[in-house]
Image (cartoon, rainbow, N blue to C red; front, top):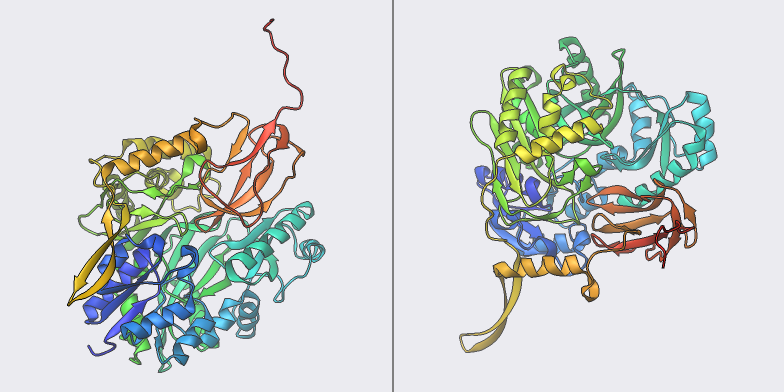
Length: 596
């Protein structure tokens, strides 16, 4: 179609694979990038070309703007699509692309700047007449300010990172006594994830629906909306299930919030695909929450009910083309539901569950779509988001779609790692979801976790495949009389994984197990904060440290009362699964019934 000849996708996993597919349909060559940890990842093999963006810490590879731009120039890419996450909403990178003569497939940097700051966005929306949740439009400077604002606008309140998103840097505070800890935690997450510790405060709406509007805007002044998505089913402000249309939105409300989306996009001179996120309260009030200036994980459900390829629209808009349809041409047909299949364990508080996928089989059949970035042998890397795949279904109405999703989830086989397959089956069977309610209090309930565990054990199984782990092998070759040292990536022999697991069980020095008094890290990650000190007496359930793993903060707590000894971690340190954090020694040994 002559839009671009080659596009680099500055992302990984399922979204990279998803974008490559659209590029191939457009006749555009695709370029993948990968970190050293992603050498064996599926997206590397799906693209027409692939380039390593190391060396350096793999967690930072996809954030290295200089290497990404140099790789685009080396590959001859005319444009860069950022996907979501990483640099997708980084105005500086958008400007750097433009400065290098590379087209940015996304909104103008100025729009990213405004909407990237939640406080600036709230100011802009208020000025445009878009309703916002009551609260501040400027950062707050202290926990004392948080307490004062809570007393003014009413408890509970939400402390939010100004540059935040996806639940990062968001803390709900029910009372003044919790303000200081929440304030510091929100600032820490804002600094860690977005390099900006600024936070603001707004009223926390009790049990609202999270309803968002998909918008498209071109460079010719055309702006349309594609209806709403309901993303109410969340855990720790991380979306789990999305659907469209929303069970709580009728035609009149759809028109109203759609117009809010159009007003918000026009207020910042938007271009490309974007999402206006909002909260719908119990009385039908709709409030602007934030704008995501990128393609979203849940764009798939909108594609199924509208018949549009949103990535295609993004690419064509970036190439200067007008929108392919007008508002009056938009038709919403049937109902679509998406379930995010994360490598997480609901029975352990949704702890990340990285590892190697030993067997893999995707569901199929009428109305079923799977966007994934893995295959049998793929490694779910603990450095990145735990999302493995998205199962998306479409049918004539919500109940038919729900039943279709249950069928698809039952067919899905992922061996080797713990996933949310059983959790989604349990939730879609629950009366609250059947009735289209918010399921407040159900998502993280013990009841649902137990049911999820039962269903997980009922999943069908297939034989494990080749391990899939790669190892580097060096060889010397001669070409045209010139000697070269060549490094090849070849599959490990089957026994290598068995040997590795034995070493993990025995631990350093060959000693089996860990003392029963030891507190160990349940996942690989980075220590963000240490809440205790050597010699402290602590109680069962008390937080010992906070570990960031797969883009989520996880609190490691004491399993019983005791005194902290052998504390072996500090902020910024990387811990591995099973690593001893500290020992909880008993203050007074219990008397023994034995006699010598």
